[in-house]
Length: 223
Image (cartoon, rainbow, N blue to C red; front, side, top):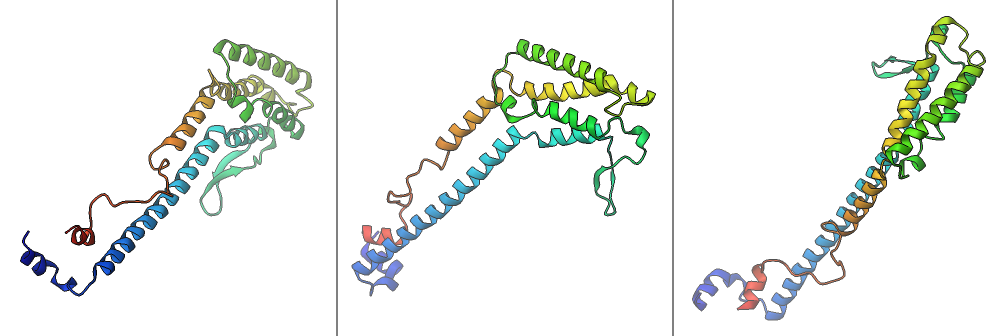
């Protein structure tokens, strides 16, 4: 490009000194740097939030325990006054299998197994079979010895005996399956590695930032 062309294209900047142009370039670079800092900070916050949500989801047992408690209480799902589906207390007491003592007894048992300590463990499949067999035997014996005290005082309620044991065991087994060969712990460790070394997290925010392409002011100084 000839000098005349430069004057034609950038004539409006003829009265700007070299120091002034350099200052504007530095200001533009600093602006880019601050924007990058802000973007990286927001990305880190979003990444941390996603990681926290992932960990909570992997270790969450509240929904499973809540479903089992409603099942033991004989609660049913139905619409409220606003049309939302919620758990509602069973009005027909003949359909409520367990009384309060029975519900409390079962919840005391299952909370020992459906928890994050189980999920974060490392079990072989054969060991899971052994544990489930032990739990099933002990729960069956406990229920046989206390079924009337637990509220199972009618023929219909007694017919729910095997279903109570089977449903409870299947829910407990699903928790142990998450610990098969330490799968959950391995997934959590992998998520930590990705979060630490993933895209956008290894940038040093204290180092100077240079725009990828020279901007308008840098082209002027470059000449």
